Image (cartoon, one colour):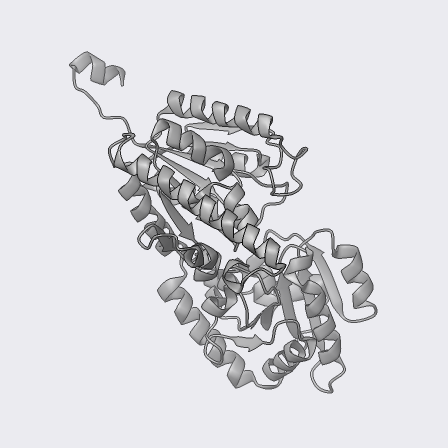
Length: 424
């Protein structure tokens, strides 16, 4: 910069993207997705500033960012428990003013809100300052949260699956203002070499045992309890011995250990070496019915490990039944147990599903593809002229219209005592 001043050459500043994230203490899928997106955006020559309450994410993004702003956000209104008390309306207005001041100081070319929660204060602030804003959506939200987030005022919605965006589409959110960018992960295939023997020896698992792995946060909606129940059913079947590895931590851990009883279930807690776990596994299972697009299924695919998933949510977009994995019926322990035994007893099927999953990963689910798709949207919106004209007015009108529309539906549903399917 000093050399540019000395020579009188005007150097154009690199475009700036402001990333905003609200989360709890755990480092889960949405944090991993934002970290991968940040890496891709930075590699394209953008400067980054991260505003978050998540210390682990802040530390990981720091090497990529010009500035890190770590704040103790209270939980957004309607979004439940967080790091502090639920925010009052007065506190929300204060945070909107803080966001507006930050935008005026940084003058970002674009704001990227990770999930709907930070949209609650960033969408109003972005409308007041005329700044394009993308909302990166990792799950399917109920009408109340779609309303309270003000997400209808975003410039564009990015969903990790059609399932994540389905309710906005049903609300009538305009076509062309949302995109599906499927999650991507690093290729772990090379890490598989030698990992199986090492991890199995560490966990005390014999080479001839059939190993099933579950990798997720141990929270209720992930339905790891169903996987444990299905495993216990499958374990009663004669044949090759079964072992279940449960990777993850969370409030359901004590109950899951009690449910496992004397079954061959190994609880590993959080594990940084996912490749080693997958290398030791013969298949991976996900029983969550509200999963938007599980990273664990993609990581398994990258290593050619066959998967079993519930025929629900975004999992139906991640698995082709009988080609890249198997579907079990949601909520049915018997169905999951049947899939486990089918894979155990048919090595040719395991090999075929694993190979097809690996091919699908290479074609569609590599992290570079995900980064490229997000960068296309970032490039498009960050280079548009900043003004309070048609873009901001259209966003403000869209926010007002859909808020009134959905509020009216909610009042009508409450009067009827039954919500319509389109709004669940």
